[in-house]
Amino acid sequence: MPTLFRFLFILAAIAGVIYGSMVALVVLVEPKDREITVRVPSERLNPPAQQ
Image 1 (spheres, rainbow, N blue to C red):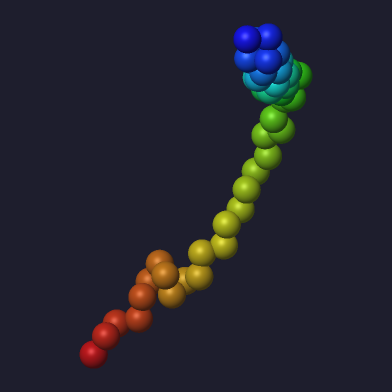
Image 2 (image 1 turned 135 degrees about the vertical axis):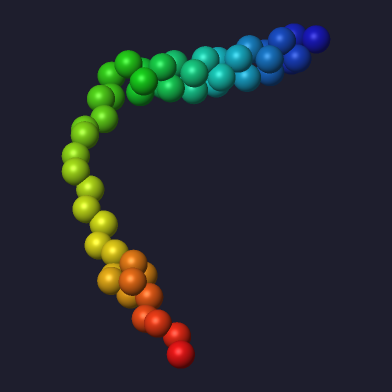
C-alpha cells in the first residue's frame, strides 16, 4: 500500500504544480490590446457579375 500512496502523492503534486502555474499565468500575465487590420480583396466584397 505505501507504493499506492506514494503514486497518488506524486500525481497530486504534479496536478498542484500544473494548477499553480495556470493560476500564476492568469494573475501575472496581462494581454496587450492592439489594432488588427485585415485586408479583404475587392473581389470578395464585390464579386464580378456572371453572364
